[in-house]
Image (cartoon, rainbow, N blue to C red; front, side, top):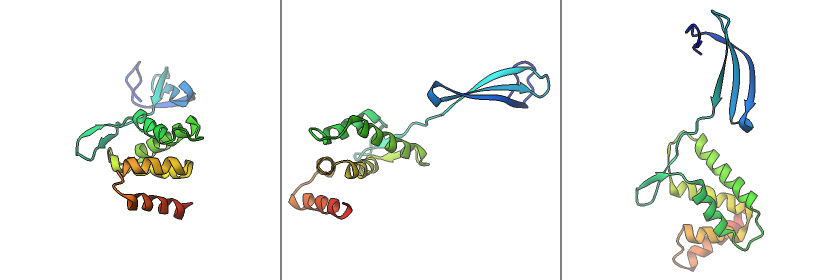
Length: 151
């Protein structure tokens, strides 16, 4: 870290503290050349995630859009909003931690179905029916069988 006083590029950390509910780290540093102290802040950099849709168009990942889809699937079901928000957090973290900056909407849908399968059976089937665009009773039957196999 470059000293703002003398420009020397070596310093030592004297003190570190978490700020902004853990979103930033405040560091007190001391220049190894002039011994002046200065403060730096580190923040977590979230790289944008681009969603590649089925028609090959691209748009920024929107966690609100995903949450709204899960809420619709859980309509009139005994599922707390906090559970759905946690599921969206988990999916977003999974996407951020992957090395891919572009992810298909299909992959996000699969992640959402995995979460819903553990949260609520009916919500899972509802989401799967819209997501997979069930065309006949056999498609619906396959989703139910998958649920029974994993349950």
